[in-house]
Structure formats: C-alpha cells, structure tokens
Length: 243
Image (cartoon, rainbow, N blue to C red):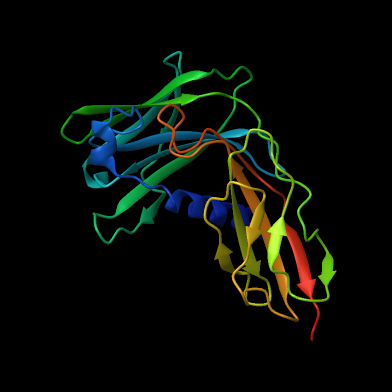
C-alpha cells in the first residue's frame, strides 16, 4: 500500500470519525438515514488519481446483533454487500462505542439518482431498513492551494487558503508533519470558507509539511445524509526556513 493511498484512507477514517450520530433522537425525527439499528449513508467521492466512486457506510452500536448489510440501488438491484470484517471504531464517552462498516463501490456505466437503501438482517431474523437519497454528480477537487506544492517559506505560515469549490458549503483541512514520521498534526473543524486559520506555533521553522483539503456539499442533511458529494485535493507539501 503506497503512502498516498494510506494518506487518503486515513483522511477518510477521520471524516467518518466526525459523524455526529445520535440514533435515538434522529430516528424520532423521521430521518430515513436512521433506524433503531443504525445509520446509513452514501458519499459520491472524487479523489485524486481514480475514477468517481461511491462510498457506502453503515454505523451502529448493535454490531453484535447484525448478520448482514445489503445495499440496494433505486431500481432494487443489489449494489453491494458491506462486509463486517472491516470497520472503524468511534469512541463515545457518553454512549456505547460505534462501529462504522464501509465499502467502496465503483460506479456503473449508468448510475441512478434516487433512494438507495440498506437491508440489515439481524441474527434474530428481523430485517431493518434505512435509506439515503443520492444524486450522482462529480464535485470538483479543491485547487489553487496556498502555500502551493513545493513552496519554500521564509517564515512559518499562520493560515492556508484555496479556491472555492462550486457546490461546496464546507471544507476540512488536514496537515501532516513529514519530519515527524508523517504524523497528522492538525484536523480543522468544518469550515464554511476556503480559508483556515492555524493554531499559533503549529507550523515551525525548519519544517516540512504536507496538507490537503476535503470539500463537501452539505452537513447532516435529512435528504442527502452526512453529505452527498465530496472531493479531495491533491497532496501539497511545503517547507519553512531554518531561522
């Protein structure tokens, strides 16, 4: 597994960990993404160096009770089966830990817009259903990142910027320290402008850093879920002079 792919997967896991899932309260609000068993969502993802794809996920605290997770397209065709062997754990001090099960699905030649659904079969035979409305559309990747790739800064930078992405309401920035074993040192909150203020002292002199931006169309939408369209910029690196 190459470093760039590992970096993209790590970013995805970080995005997943930010899911603010409160199953009981949101199920009472009749949001089709939620049920007493869990939360279902599909993201239309535009990542560097690969075709557009769907990211299917199901999050639950009831993972020990689940036999299988099947995802269906709007025409009731089986899209995929989300396996139970790969998952991300979301720790919660106030509630039971959640597991997020996920699978990437390549787009068909004629992908459909509409209500996608999961049928989650429990070990007791009960079948649970959740739905997500998906619009197949490519969101442009964030561009014109500043500092640009390969920039040698004379002093540590205090902010980052990029061009606004059409259709994106939110952005998130991720920074790694390449001198420190590529350690992730900064994950921003969701930003509503293409600009990120950095904590004082985060970027040091004589540094070597890597950063990227994730764009998304919505956040916790009752129709589109956590988000429908997402895109990821290419990796940008910069250095800072030794002062």
